[in-house]
Structure formats: structure tokens, C-alpha cells
Length: 133
Image (cartoon, rainbow, N blue to C red; front, top):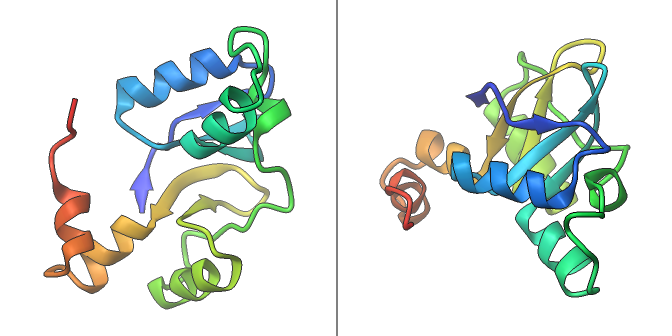
């Protein structure tokens, strides 16, 4: 898992969330309120649910666009096999890791799993590559 995931509150603007993604070179942010996971916002959500619909990113909030509960999550004690199973079952590329009670503590991506489970794969190589700014 990647610890210390980027997170924003539901009332954060999409423009601010996108800037945070750019600053941290990530494709998603967790949406949390009062230390509880509220949803997940991906770069694809921004493209499909905001830009393609002509929404103003400086006025639209992440709470309006994010994937809402029930969000598929892992606990810190879960295995990589369980993560793979959940990704397959729900067709997701990222899984928030939450402690008991819903507090987000990390995120597991498809790239993280590839680097761990199949370190010589093309996906693992791509995941380890430097950002292309």
C-alpha cells in the first residue's frame, strides 16, 4: 500500500483536487470528512463527470463527482490476494485502505500489486517509471 494518501473534504473544488493530483503526481484523491472515508475521486471522474459535462471546476465540488459509499475498501491486515479478488470483482484499479472505523490510512493500486506480485511485468515497470511531466 502507499501510505499517507492524498485526501480532500467533500466541499473542496474539483480545480483544487486536480491541482493536488498534479502536485503529487497521482490519479486519485480520497474524499474524507471528519476522518471518515466519504468517497474516491479519480482523474477519470474529473474528465467524464466534470469536463465532458461542461461543469465549472472552480464551482463544482468533489462531493458532487466522487464515487460514493459503498466504496470498496481494504483493511491494513488484508492480503494482496484479497486486494486482487476485490479489484477483479468490482473492476476497480485502486482500493482505499481504512482502519476500523473508516479512517483512511493508505491506498493500494493495480500498479502497487503488479510491482509486488509480478515485479518483472510491463505494468510493474510502468508503475515504477518516473513521472512524465
